[in-house]
Amino acid sequence: MKNLSRRTADWVVNFLKKEDGPTAVEYAVMLALIVVVCIAAITALGSNTNSTFSYVGSAIKPPTTGS
Image (cartoon, rainbow, N blue to C red; front, side, top):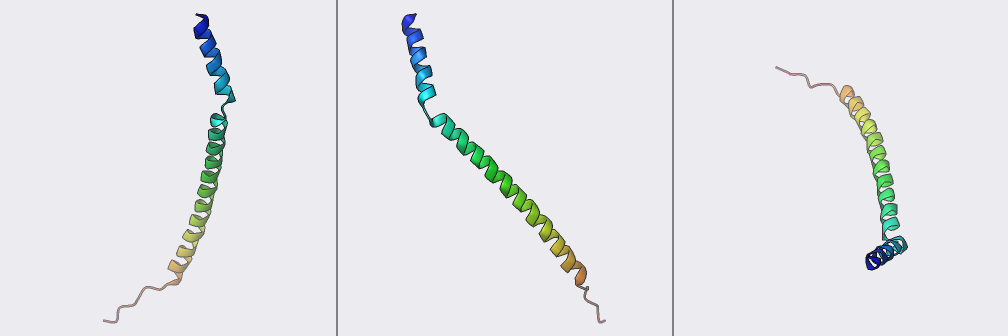
């Protein structure tokens, strides 16, 4: 029983000493922020593009038939 508790304690200490977990969390936070910025940029560009196409579409007159 002491051997099991010692191994568990060693595992917990090693887990807390490792820096893999915090690094992964930092990368996940950075990725989430990049995704949010990309979505905001695409939304802004989409709205601007939509209004530009609407303006150009309303400025163009349909061709008249000559027959």
